[in-house]
Image 1 (spheres, one colour):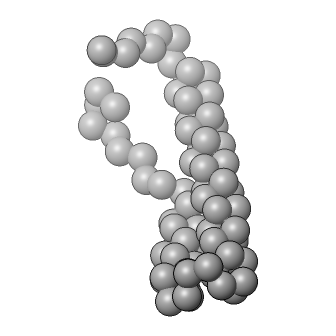
Image 2 (tube, one colour; image 1 turned 180 degrees about the vertical axis):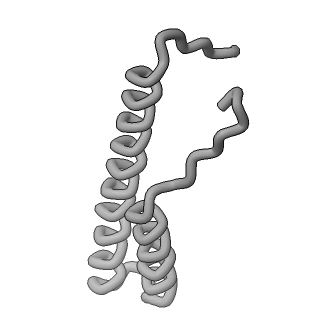
Length: 77
């Protein structure tokens, strides 16, 4: 922000990023084209969706908070 305020990522996002690392590591250890590989791949894909939803939710809440607290919001392009 213009006053130097920095906003940290929420705790649920940090936890999910850790879990994504773990799932990705487990996926990489599987043999390609096996049934277990496919299950792990689907799990990682679903988790990517959840991670995206968490990020989007945080950004929506943050933008709403900024707009409600301030009368004028200016964006640079």
